[in-house]
Image (tube, rainbow, N blue to C red):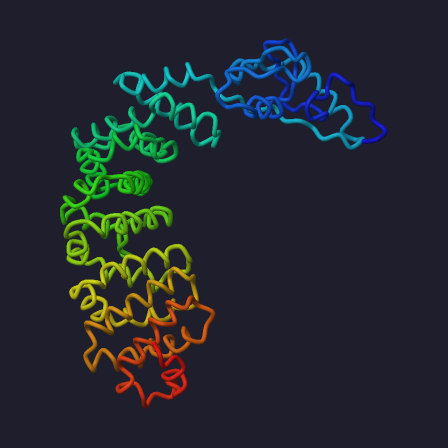
Length: 418
């Protein structure tokens, strides 16, 4: 590198490095795109202009006014290739973000029956490229507002229309919790109905990706939905969610969609009689079955969070105790996954200890390792509040568990004031 003389006009005046994507400003100076965009973004946010680093003239902050200098880029690329043997890195041709007017035109075409499918495919390509500028532009021109009626249209026509997969993916990847987007979906019962219909539709193996995308949209929507919409969800809605978690389903959705479904249940749990509806849908059995075969940390955290919510109800505790692996799988996850999982596990054990502690249940807790895990929590580097909860459970039922070899006297007397 030191032996090669780099032409001065190849260097960015700001970074003093070879320009990978030279662009020219309205002042006539050329800079590397990354450097000048960073320059334009710094300074007083309210000001419409800044100054050109070289000429000191006023320079608009609008990055869309930067013009790619294709000729210079090609010259630099050719020079880099010619000098590659001397240690000069070659420079790939950059992918340019589309201007906002072109993106707006594509979004408007989504409302045209003849142009919508092709427009959705083009927008989908922009999103999949993971170009943040394209995503931001799509958000600013109202892409979410265009996707919602298209998704609902599929439900009203009762068919998986062409472009649905793309519309769902665009919604999920472009989504952000802006005021406009929240207002659009927080009371949108038609959108919820549409997604529910998609989730229970019969699909081929090649179409099952549509269910995955639908679940991710549902996760986005339920995170900002109103309490009125969430409390009014019907039992069939939860049955559709639980069906996607069923291990023996004909088509398996992705792990991402599994986590999305669990998050939807968590979002819905606090409202109305949703916990009852979720329990009645057979969720607890499916959650335990899912966790028994699970190896991913985040899935464990979400499963135990849902179980902790549901075990606040008598029916939820009864369903967990009915499953032969219910207590066992919660005990096994304790102290092995994360602090949030430990918190949920102790909540579950506490609910059962306070409200469902028959002698048979207490002996089962001892047999499957719940009691030994509670002892370990007291000795582990957990939060004091978890240790206190574990100690309370052990003390409450010490008469039943006192003969167990895993109960040491000092564990029951170590914190006599608690």
